[in-house]
Length: 166
Image 1 (tube, rainbow, N blue to C red):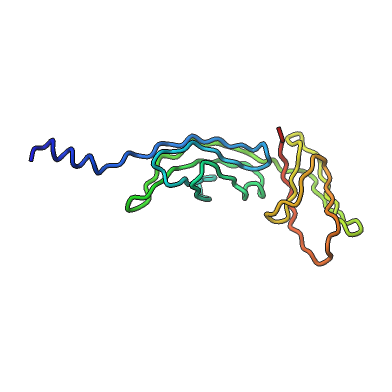
Image 2: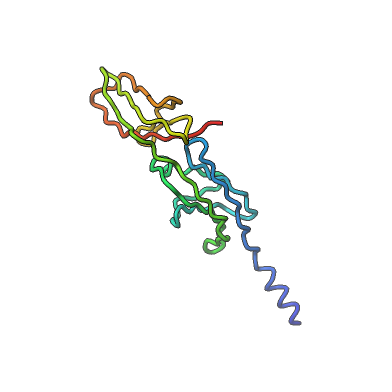
């Protein structure tokens, strides 16, 4: 065998490395929505927030619902991956910093069988989503929201998220 023939055989078993996805983060709807470019040959994408892997997806979009509920500043990257014998990862995308602002003076007042939620309007937001745990129960553009006919034996884990609608 010639040396060039051996080199050609070795080259056929090498798969190209995965490209690096391009990442954008959109917070305009009061959520951390990550959008990234598709990578040829990728089986999926690993989502990294503040240096920790928080999820995987086979889509080119990911909503970080935990960030939505926590609020604060976050840094994101995405890595494409595929499997050969073990996972093979591409290089991490560009790093994108994004923030959801905390709302001030959030109060809850009982009124007859209702709960009245009030807060100080924010310059950052035009609209607000109200969550009980991870379930959205309403939205408003005002700085007040009424939950009507609340059963006495119900425990609420209320969270308020501001966003700007366009």
